[in-house]
Image (cartoon, rainbow, N blue to C red):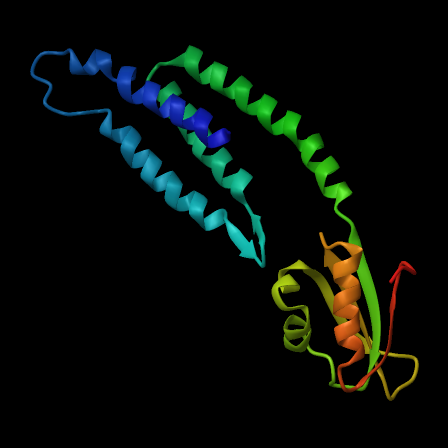
Length: 190
């Protein structure tokens, strides 16, 4: 949405932002190319803000905001103040208005934690990824610490956006793994 708003403004700046210069006598340059260079440069910077962690992409809103703010700067530099102000208002409405919806959506996604007792060195992140299979991208947390019994490790695993049945399947695979002594769901359901 932010990119669309920014793209509309870039098109307006390209079409109308330099019309006063292009009509002048003996002008042989194309000032609208400045917008193209800004789009390329900000696109490069925006790409650097995007990170991928498993299935989760972080930084898209930041990248889109950078791009839209660059478009606003181009509009102001071209003298298109009304378009810049309108775009600023639209961006603020989008950024402020959609944040509560995003938070409500993320609150609906349950985190399903498991606590596993295993022999030292038995559980690794790679082993857990093998056990989880295609659902490995849903692993939100993996912590190995010494258990109360010094002959065991306590492994805390949290899955995000997985139904209880899928966590139960992974737990059954954990049960059959050599070296796993015991496991339980932290919330009591499994």
